[in-house]
Image (cartoon, rainbow over all chains, first blue to last red; front, side, top):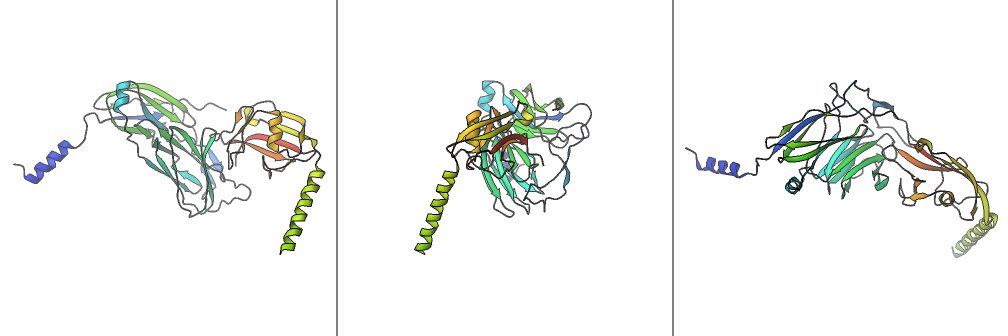
Length: 241
Length: 125
C-alpha cells in the first residue's frame, strides 16, 4: 500500500531526468618512474614591491606535484567526441559556469581552474598586498588590472576555448592556469592524480590530458552505458631544458 | 594669475625649442638585441635615427617588431624577429637606455650616442 504522498514522490523520482546514459569515466594521471622532488622557490621582492603578508618565503613550486604513488596533481582532463553522433548528443556543458581564483599568501589558489566557453572567473585578493592581475592566451594579453588589498573582486569571461595563464605582474612566481573547454566533460586531477568525469553518454571519445610541464597525452576510448574505469594515463617525464 | 600662466607657457616653449635645437635632425645611436634563452645570435649595431626616435622606432629600423600589450599598453613590444613574449615561461622583452630600465619603449626620446639594449629574459625572482 502506497500513500498518496509517497506515490507522488515515486512518480517524481521516476520522472526525474536521471538518464540511463549517465556513466562515469574514472581514471588517474600517473608519472611513471622515480618521483621528482618538488621544486623549491624562494620569494624575492621586486624593487619597490612588498612581501609583507606573503607568508613563508621558502615554498614548493606549483609546477609539478606528484603524489606518493606517482599520481600527477592538477592535470586537466577532458573528452572530445570522436564521432558526429556523440557530438550532437553532448552539446550542453556539464562544467560549472563560474570559477574563483583567490590570491592568498602571494599564490593563486587554486593553481588550475576549468571553465566552459563563456564561463566567468572571479579573481579575489585575500592578501594584504597589491597584486597585478594579467591574463594571457598565448602571447596575447586579455586583461590587465591592479588589485589592492581589500579591493572588490575582478571578473573575466572567457569567450574562446583554450588555455589561459593568469600572472601577477608584481610577484613573478605567482601564476595559475585556466582551461576553457568547448566540451562538456572536464576535470582536474586531485593530489593523487585521480579524476572523475560524470554523466558521460555512451560513445566514442578522445580522452585528452594536459599538464603544464608534462604536455598533452590523448587516447581513444569507448564509453559504455555503465561508465568506464580507465587504465592509468601515463605521462612522459619533463624534458631537460 | 594670467601673467604667471603666460610666463610658464613661454618657459615651456623656450625649453621645447632649446631641446629641439640641441638634438640634431639625424644622429647615431647603438642598438643591441640580446635574444637570451631564445638562442638567436645577438645584434649589435650603430644606426642613424631621426629626431624624435624612440627605443621602439630604433628597433623597428633593424628588426621585425610585433606590437601588443605585454604588461600595460598595446604599444609595447611583444615580439622581435619572431621571438614573442612567452607568459607561460615568464619570458619578456625588456629595454634599457644607457643601462637604465626606467624608460618607455614608445615615449622616451633618444639622444645622440644613446645605447639601447633590448633583452629577452625570464622574469625570475
